[in-house]
Image (cartoon, rainbow, N blue to C red; front, side, top):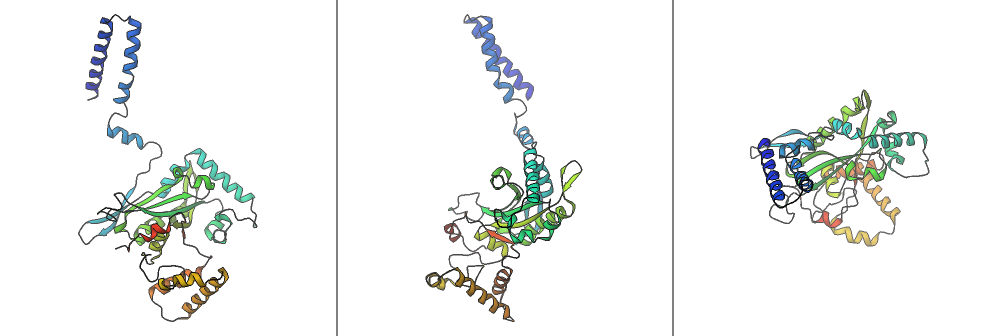
Length: 336
């Protein structure tokens, strides 16, 4: 096929050369015209000429292929799978960029030499990170931040709404400065799963297994040089945090819609009107938690809320992304 393309190109250029010569142009002018016209042809039939060649080229700069992970067989007899990008290979590819690796090393050195307890400028200054045993024992470890979100691949208001919704998990490296950490170019994909097939235990279980290996053996940041890495927290919007924590995923009609307290929907407006300040609200919350802990028998939802309340700031497992609008959450229906 390449030979045919080259032969056809040569025939076209020969015809152009003959026509221009017959029109009386001198050889130098004809040569310039044919030279300019011939320039696009090799590009069109060269290394990126075919779809296969282009796809192979896309894989050259640090491409890390995903793995298909089985989740079992559904009621329809079809297999359920999700795709996971190996985190160790992803980190190694990311750190092959000298600018990224230099920024990370600079951050680690800065944290080791400069620390002002009176200034809170990043999550590093929080008690959760400072009391984390892994990061205390490995101060030069890579700090990973996980984020999960959902997106539609079809029209979100059409008949296929939610049918093809995809749940995605990403990570960013917390050692990068905030302005680089949030840059889309530095946010790496971890997993993709159809929302209707999502199983938190299997999807996040596989992700946790990857990180446990990295915590133990580390990732290769340069030839024969390894650096350990761990997760400091998971962030997400309201719906994602509820899904991961096993809470109610309906914010528009459910009676109990908050994962921080047991307020009911009918009491919400009165609660807003009667609240006189943050101190009173915290005191009421602490009383409710105490009452729940004193109960010998609680249902599942109350038990989950009591654990969430009791942990407080000591063991944060997931956070909110305030950039998601409340209206967007209200539109979400209960996940089937």
